[in-house]
Image 1 (cartoon, rainbow, N blue to C red):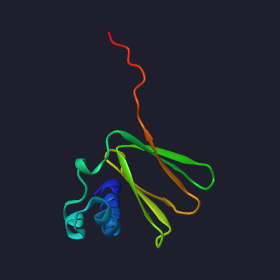
Image 2 (image 1 turned 60 degrees about the vertical axis):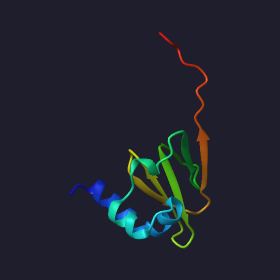
Image 3 (image 1 turned 180 degrees about the horizontal axis):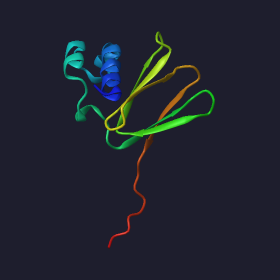
Image 4 (image 1 turned 90 degrees about the horizontal axis):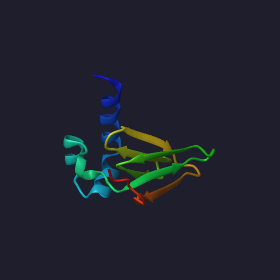
Length: 104
């Protein structure tokens, strides 16, 4: 198995209890079925600023904070699952608002 799917499965298993609370599904269902397209928001960007000023931004993503793990997990529909340090992190949502579209 390639590393990306293997790591994604590992993160879902490790964060299943937190995911169950956020998604309103059982831990067993999360571990067995994983995440699906309906779990991801479609109209906002997730922006995370880390303690050193670094930042990441994802589309179709949500986050879970776990103070006991000192971590923030980010689950994206298309770009994998990630874990970032909890310390002095800032998480925000940016509403995508279309201001202009050129029509042909």
